[in-house]
Length: 300
Ligand code: NAD
View (tube, rainbow, N blue to C red):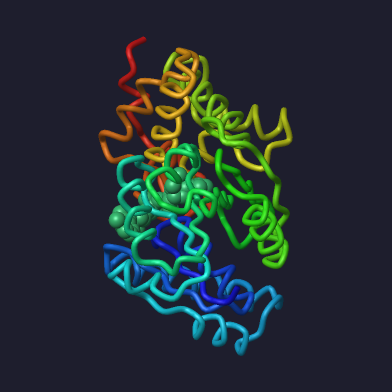
C-alpha cells in the first residue's frame, strides 16, 4: 500500500495527512474548499516545525513529508490511483453517503475505502457502494500526530482481510489500533459524548461555571483536559452531530443534546476552529480564557 487519498482537509484531515506523509506514503488531499487546503498545508508545516523544535525530526524530514503531499479540489482525480481513501469530511450522513458513491465510482476496484466518522454507521456508508467488504472505519483521534489510538470499526460486511490490512497499517503509522463493532458512536464517542453533554448540562443548569467544571474533571479524574475544553477542541458542531446519531440510533432520551450546545452551534461558537466556544482562542490555545458564551443568558 503506497498511495493514500484523504478527503476533507479540516481539523482531522490535516492530521491524517501529516501522519501518512511523515511515514513515507504518497498522499493526495482533496477538499471542496481551496482555503481549507491551504490552511491544512499551513497547519501541517507548523506542526512539523514544532517537531523540529522538539528535535524529534529534522528539516530534511519536514521537506520529505511536505513533498509527499499533493492537494486537489477534484475528489475523482485525487482517488483515481489510490490504494486507500480515508474520508474525513464534515460529520453529516448525507454528505458521507454522497462522497462514498463518488469514491466507489472513481477509486480503483481494489482500493479500500475508510471513513474517519466519529459516529455514523459504517454499514450504512458501505451499503451505498458495490464493495461493502472493502469499507471500514478508521477513526483517528485529535490531534492525530499526537494521539496513539485508532478505533478500527468493522461494518456488517467488512472482510477479515480488509480489517487485518487496516490494523497492520495503523501499527505501521506508529498507532495503537483497537478493533470494535459498528454500533452508534462505536466505543470512544458512546462513552465520551454523554460525558461532554452532561458537562454542558451542568453549566446550563448553573451547577458550576466553565472553569469549575473543567477543574473538577482535570484534578478529580486525572483528565488531561476538562470536558468543555475538549468539546472546543473537537468542535461543538461535531459533538452535536455525534449526539444526534446516538440519540436517533438508540432512541434513548439520555442522549438528547443540551439546548446550550444547540444554541452555541447555531451562533457559530464552534470552539477552537471558530476561535470561540466555551473558551476564547483569539490569543491561541495555550492560555485558557473563559469566553462569554450563551451560558450567561441561560434561564436561572
Ligand atoms: P472540519 O469541519 O474541521 O473539516 C471538514 C472538512 O471537510 C472541511 O474542510 C470541508 O470543507 C470538507 N468537506 C466538506 N464537504 C466536502 C466534500 N464533499 N468533499 C471534500 N471535502 C469536503 O471537521 P473535522 O473535525 O476534521 O471532522 C472530519 C471527520 O472526522 C468527521 O467525520 C468527524 O466526525 C471526524 N472526527 C472528528 C474529530 C475531532 O476531534 N474533530 C475526531 C475524530 C473524528
